[in-house]
Image 1 (cartoon, rainbow, N blue to C red):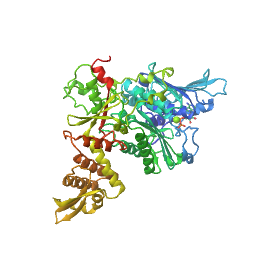
Image 2 (cartoon, rainbow, N blue to C red; image 1 turned 90 degrees about the horizontal axis):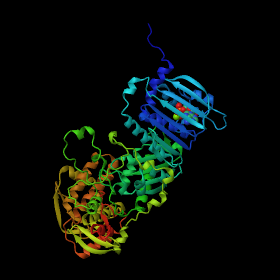
Image 3 (tube, rainbow, N blue to C red; image 1 turned 45 degrees about the vertical axis):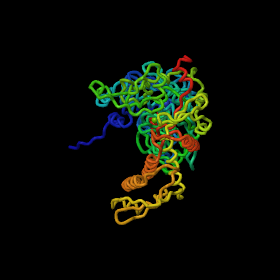
Image 4 (cartoon, helix red, strand yellow; image 1 turned 60 degrees about the vertical axis):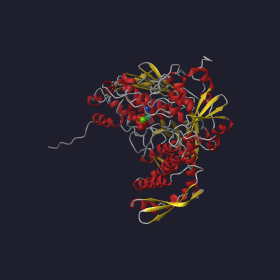
Length: 630
Ligand code: ADP
Ligand code: MG
């Protein structure tokens, strides 16, 4: 007896639905994309019970006529492509013609739609894929799709749904991304009747960033623009103070589509490399525009991964646009008590861990500047070891939703939004201003104090010097010309291992370009004849060469793209070892020299590992401490 039979349409659809409809957020994503494809300029989303009870998406787009509305909900029904050839230049978000059919198969769906020229609207009700009712109704122009009781007929899937608040948060996250992707569209999200997100739709990306992340984050943002061949890069990126504890603040748009790309992520990392400490991630909203035929969006059904025709071109476009935006807007930020919120991991402990006795979590290295600022600014004496009172950062991608609060900043009604263009005028101290300041001297033989206008500047002498030396070494390496060298009267010998010897033989060029003249000496030694001349800094030649050899040895095993970063790390280490240390007493001329060398650097504000070099304390803060002003 034969056993194979063709599944009926409904069963087939609900199995296939699993690919598109995983959870309420995926429904919202599909429906909102349809609204955008229909040319809507206003899209309003309402959800209850995490979207599981109900979700509705209402738009003012083109609408459908009755015939289209009826077939829209059957599988592979799409108005967006006709042949496989059209896939080469996709201009719409949808094209598979699967979403409505899949959603309708696993929920109770009501579609109400009216085209501008139609006298009345049309309504269609479907339950579990079967049309149960239809007819004309009064309706505004556009489309509303109401999805109720998701997965009511597929209990296996229903079981996998998370808490309502988790599902609601996932929806909010998707909506945030739409807001950023399409600043020209006004989006609204109501969760259990409460407005949690509302964007103005005024086609200004900074307003969209404001709507999602709030005023402070928008204030950190500086405009990005650049291009490389066919790729145009635009958007906003936050100065280093606006970095976050995870990557959730990185949004990438390619031709207005939200995507992921490892090439772009790598470019962001590289651009921020010496500006951020470990564990901090750039906040950036980047738009890439390029001809559709140079991007393949059809890589993954979730349509998130893209493939570029040339990753290297895209990398370089993004990298250079970011670096120039950051350099143009670099400076020491104004004193702010909550400038750098504590990293998120420290603020949202998982509930399970919280109930069991856990050792005091080690605070993940808060940036020195704000901590000092807080200690100084707080009205009661604060023990140095006390945890900082920094408020938790706005949790954009909460791992635990018990603590999820939908952002109130996002709920600012349109009318109350202030013009964002005016938010950017935070005063930045430029390094060139240092020369205008009066050097007070050294504090704790560690910090250089400078009086500048109405502020006290504190400069970490080690970090500053390290940065100066690092930039010198890097410049020498990049120019591929020998830097000034310091010949040793008596050449120094150092012993090396056979592996190190092999590395040395093949990387002589690297050492020469840095100013190390080295020669093999016997079978297991090197002769050091000269060192790079780094001002009066004392280079520990043997340590430097050894570090470099070891790093270069790692290069052999590493992927080629990490070579640069290993070379950089070698430079850091050489700079760090040669730089003045904390507790080194500096003569006044040495201090002057240090500040003069620091001023012309492109980014003198952070050390090679992203720690701050200069911090600011306004006079007003001191006067508050002395109660001269209240
Ligand atoms: P796709 O978006 O891949 O074409 P869908 O199943 O999401 O497939 O939608 C099927 C079709 O229904 C679309 O091609 C479009 O013609 C129509 N449609 C869906 N949603 C809307 C909407 N909000 N406004 C107008 N037309 C819509
Ligand atoms: Mg679609």
